[in-house]
Length: 169
Image 1 (cartoon, rainbow, N blue to C red):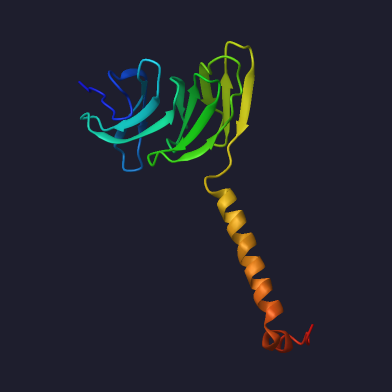
Image 2: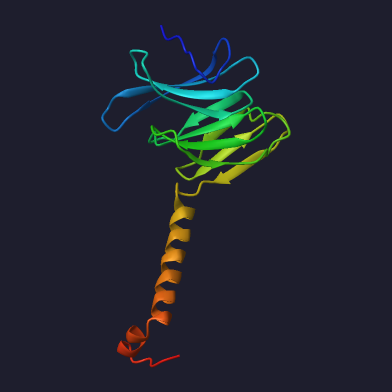
């Protein structure tokens, strides 16, 4: 028996969703999607003995749906607000979170391949999300800053300009 308790939830934690995935080392992890009476939504990873491995608060409102990618590396969460969020597994780091896409709760979510997430709702809409790699934006910005720093260094260093045969500016 697993009794889910969370410091993020006041009172009783209601487990609403259960999924499993197998880690690279072959061990099975239990993924529990839960919330308090009216929130917040929490997701906890547990081993099969019932020990909580990690937990993350995913939203202030309740969780409505959850899916794990085929390789177990990503977790897709549909929220009461109509938004969806993608987390890395088992680190539980947020990869991407949308605004409220649906006018009703996102009752169904699924992965299509590794980089596409789909959500459906009672509002009769399907929303497709192209998942960007975790940290991709960070590396683009970092690369840009490195190039700017290099150019600033070259343009202010007369010895480097002469060595390059450019002369002085």
